[in-house]
Image 1 (tube, one colour):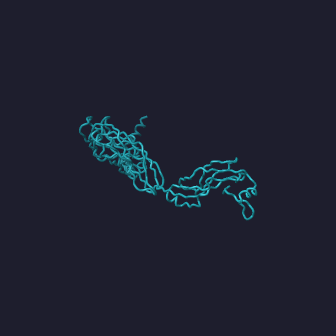
Image 2 (image 1 turned 180 degrees about the vertical axis):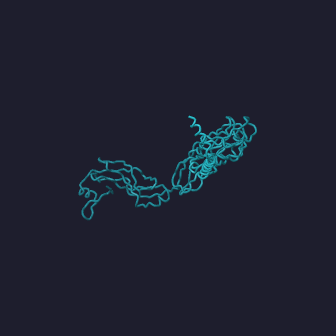
Image 3 (image 1 turned 45 degrees about the vertical axis):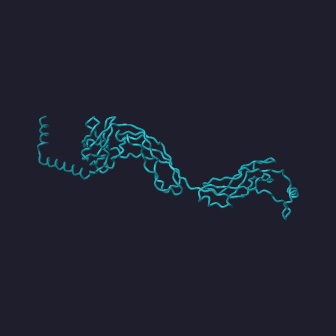
Length: 343
């Protein structure tokens, strides 16, 4: 049994110089490795003054702080700067006057696993206080910048009234808030977007609810109208339908409304007016709405005058008998139709 304590004593006393040198060498290796594998980097994060309820910040001389961080390259890359901030608490509880609050590394809040905060600048922040008030305030019409490809931009937005909080001495004279501008440069169609309500530093606004407005931007293009007269009315029939039809009137006028590019691209020969006679089964007069056919893919509106056509179906008669009654025979002895039709 006495041999065991002697062995422990020998472990600590024999070759003492070598063991001390090994310990020093190991320490140097650890620090050298850490210096090689770690680096320092500076980041800018906001300064938040945590005041009591009913107290507002009237003035704050610095809004952001620079922190120096040490860590591995991967750890520094994993830092979420949106989660980092400097949080300081006032020493005094009164509202009047101001104070200078010290800032240290312990004031940095947020996830910093694997990263050490070694320095914070500045070392202090000066803050003035005031009573906090709440009021409703209007939001101005959002401004537009640029020009659409065609036409002009018309803006509607909501909400037009928001609630704000801030220092009484600043908010009492504040009459309206503005939003960030809308870029409509080269826009070809209408669109919606969220716009942040601007918190100007001099306004002292402490909180805005809601913080955004929804804007609808309607791109209104220049439009023109053009009319064509005496467009012939055609009948749309199926193979089993009688073609013994008459139209009143046989000619109509057409007006088209749209962009200059679309309207000017249409020729009179490309406009067709027809009435659907496929469902006419009985003799007599039938009132049918006229329809228009124009080239596809054009965003235009059309009007037909008159919009209703009186379609008269006559009793079916043999072609020879009908030709004798009307006298409409061609050179081959065949009857001619009085109404143009299309299948």
